[in-house]
Length: 217
Length: 241
Image 1 (cartoon, each protein chain N blue to C red):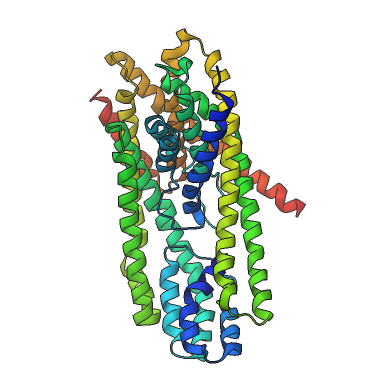
Image 2 (cartoon, rainbow over the protein chains, first blue to last red):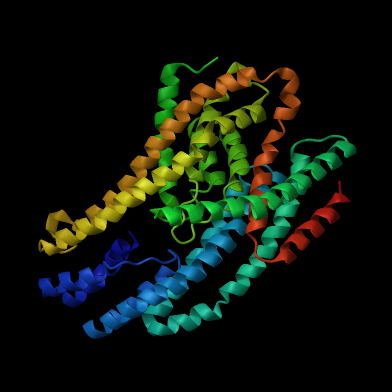
């Protein structure tokens, strides 16, 4: 489905360049309907790059398209890792922590404002770099140091998860100090048990299932 | 014991038709976190008349499925649909006499009646993606037939785009309606079965959902150092209890 979105997004440029020749316009549009799968946020950088290449002529547009298939895989991996494994868990963990600290709309509002500010800024920057500097967008994304940021975000997520467990004791209203301590220790024990289960039993079970499916196919 | 039938139909229709706009945000449109359970359940709760219980359910569900990442071709559980159905059902049922003073227990039984649909939400997402993948062939056919993407009144590209969105929206609305309707019927019975003496426990059992989510997130992390950090912070905080 992303390729239809890509064709739709680049279509105004194609129409401007080839609008005088409908056959050429259709041919160029079909070129953009090839399989395209990337991270939806960093795809803005690829779109900018394709706009840059296509506006230099049909031949450059073809080169851009052939290069975009490897770019989409690269940006897909980098973007998925940064946004889905880094930013999203961190924003969610912080929002839940805020909820248990101060029950009310502050949690959801924080989640919406924080996450959107980050991804809109990154989309805007990589798209503009793609349009103006073409393949130079790679340097820009490299300079953002997304893998390093992702590691830092993972630490922030970890700390906020630990604080969330602590705040839950107060939220679930344990009056006595002993009751609160026991509840806190019970939650930590459950987390340790579930962590062990997911790391060992659940993962090997999933792998066995995958092997069974592979054999079937 | 139950809501009257006209209220069930009206609230289910309202939450499924309006709330499903949040579900579009998940993959089809915007991706601005309107689909996160914390936001979606609060919105569903607001539509059904009690945003506070929706927010509580959203906070419980927010971390629960977060360790299932939409990386590559993996389709995770659609926690947006679960949050919409649970948030809407809990808010609707909060007016019942047997729910008075037992809102955390109500939230728990609504979640228990909604969570069995988790596998169904993955199937729904899969069906929509397969259907939308067929749209590419239809666009190709239109182009081969000589239409451009904005062919006069036909507006091929816009129509196909809207068609893709409509598939997502229709599937989400139908799934939320089904899940919420079933929850509105099942949850009051479960609530009725919870004796008063068990309420101090059931009022606090919601903690299990964030705990599952936290364990899932920690098991997804690559470095053992993060576990050390988690354990270190947890031990330090123990002295503040």
